Length: 426
Image (cartoon, rainbow, N blue to C red):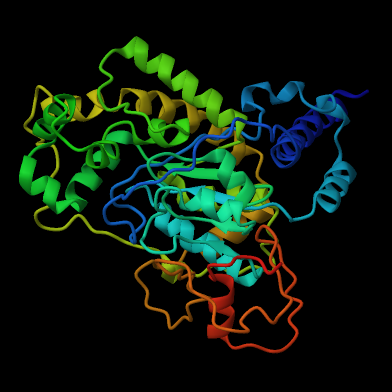
C-alpha cells in the first residue's frame, strides 16, 4: 500500500475508533449494570433549594454505566472493526426511551443545565419528578412515591441527605445519571458569597473551615462547602467535611468513583458548559436538528460589589489553602473527571458540537419573551392534577417523545401535565 494511502487508512481508523468509543460506552450506559445496591431514599430539609444552587451539594463522574472510560478500549469490537453502519444501527435499535436524572449541585451551573434539560423535556413531552411540598424531597418521599408505582422521565431536583440511586432508578426507569462539577475552590467562594448568612457570620473562608472541622457548623450547611461532590456521588448519608489526610482523601475518592461507576454517572464540567450540553445531547441521542435551546434562559451571576475573594496580598495562601484543605476529595475527583471529560469531547460528532455552540452562543443576559415551556421553567413543587387532567394519552419517555394527544391543549395545560405530581399516566 502506498505510504499516503496507509496514512489515510490509519487516520480513518483512529477517527472511526473515536466515534465507536462513545457508541460502545453509550450502549453499556443504556443497557448494562442495572443491579446496584438499593440505597435508602430518605431526604431531609436542605435550606433554600429553588435556585438550584443553594445548600446541598452534588456533582458526579464522567463514567458511563459500569464502564470506566479508561477501560473502554477493551469493550465491544476491536477498534478497527466499527464503521458508520454500526453507529446507525446502534442508534436505531437503542431508541430514546431511557430516563435522565440530574444530580444537582450548588454553585456549579446546575440550574442552567437543568433549564436546558427542561427545554428538551418539554419539546419531547417528558414527565418531570418534583417534590410535593418543598423545594427538596422530604424524608421518605421518594420511597413512598416509588411504592405507589409512579414513574417519570426526568428528575432535576436536589435530593438530600444522599443520592438514592436505587430508588431513582425505579422512579425514572432506565435512568442515566449526570452531574456537573466546578473547580472546588471557585465553587466554595461562589457559595460563600451566595450564602449571605454564612458569610456574615464567619467573615472569612478560614474561619468557616475551622468551625466545620470543629463540628460547630450544622451538616446541612457544612456539606455543600466541603467535598460536596464526594458526598452526593457516594450515594450515602455520610460526612466527608473533616477529611484532612491526603492519603485518606485519595482512598475515599476511589470509593466514590467505584460507586458512581456502578450507576453509570456522567460528570460534566461547569467551565465548559457548551461542550457539556453537547456531550449530554450526544449521549442521550437528542436530535439537535429538531431541538431548540434558548440561551436567554441562562442564569448569570456577576461578582459585584461586596463579593468576597481571597486577598491577592495573602502571600501565605491561607485563604485558598483553607478552602482546598476541606475539599481534598473533590480536588482528586475534579482532576480525574476533567481528564475523562476530554475523552468525551474528543469523541463528539462535529455536527452536534456546532449545532449546540450556535444555539448557546448568544448573549445570556438578553431578554427574550418566552413561554414557560420554551424557557425551560420548572415549578418549585409538582403540580396537583385537577379532575380529568389525565384524560389524554400522551406520554413522554426519557426525554423521548411522541405526544399522542387525544385533543389539543394549551401551553399552560401541557405545562401542568408534564409537571404533574402523578407522573406518567397509567
